[in-house]
Amino acid sequence: MHVAILGCGYVGLELGRQLLDRGHDVVGVRRSDAGLAAIEEVGLQAVRADVTDADALSSVPDVDALVFAASSGGRGADAARAVYVDGLQTAIEHFGARADAPERLIYTSSTGVYGDHGGEWVDESTPIDPTTEKTAVLAEAERVATEVAAEHGIDGSVVRFAGLYGPDRYRLERYVEGPVTEGYLNMIHREDAAGSVRHVLEHGGERGLGRDPLLPNDVLLAVDDEPVDKWAFADWLAEECGEPSPEKRTIEERLVAGDLSEPAERRLRTSKRCANDLLHEIGYELSYPTFREGYRAAVEAYTG
Image (cartoon, rainbow, N blue to C red; front, top):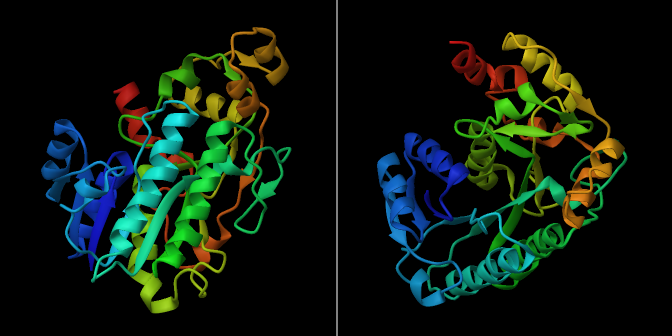
């Protein structure tokens, strides 16, 4: 299988490595010199292109599958729309118009599109309810990934990542030092985030992608086995690191400080637990089923 990863960054590099290890041909697409160097370091073919520039995308070779994992760089809703909606549509239209168009597309989204569910469980069948401008953009991009892709003869699916962590993104000190605001953490290790996409790419043709049995709603939740209360997680992490239990704050106590933007306040008020039943049903085996396994390397580095 020949795969192009558009926006081959934190998860994309790991995805490319996994695919390469399994004998697939992989092209990583980034804009910057540093990004291209990182792609080459993993051993992938590197191509410089901006997903919002159709002419630049012409330098990407024909592939069987596209993975759209581009980032807006943590900027606001307008920047996010330019990448996730406009860039995604540009990529779909460009590749869909080729004589040898890709058969499938996977767009990597976020569980942030669910909004607030009062701590209740959500899954692929739960209606989304984005509460910020940025998560509304992500929801619109999901529609583009499925509906617009279908209009161009491409089978589009969405993989919604929970909170990503792993090398360079453990943020261990945030929880060990505190203060820690209440709520649930839905997480997935980078290796499993990439692995879930890789699994869909490798097995979609066998068991059916999109409207077929593998992903019946065109959506997969990529999250580990145990959403965890932030206070409980912080206490576990502190104990493992040999540190005292950190200071705790309720949501209301955090809001009283008055230093949060409106979108940040909305995010703070959202609470849900993400179920991964479908991830197991399609046969993916997590390398890091819970935070306990996933944070082991970080704890050892901290205490070592």
